[in-house]
Image (cartoon, rainbow, N blue to C red; front, side, top):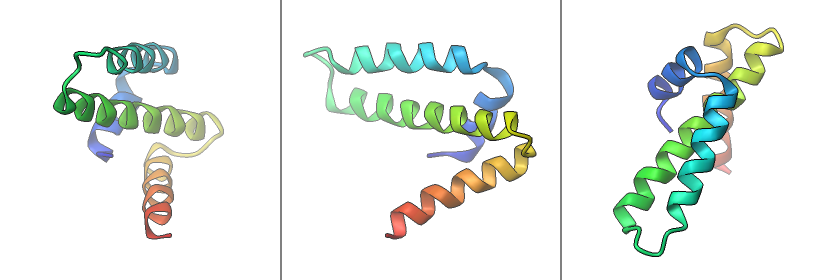
Length: 82
């Protein structure tokens, strides 16, 4: 998870575009010839896109972008600590 990348996705991509991109990356990751390195990159991209979708939802519910990003980061870090 990289907050600057999530912020960029939030600012430049719609939820619909992010959903389509995640769908493509998930399909890509299912190819038999996909290398471990490719899977790691795809997984990182998917994680950032899903995070951006969650931040989009928070913003749509009235939260400021900065607060939505910080809240998402705290949620992820909190789940890692458990």
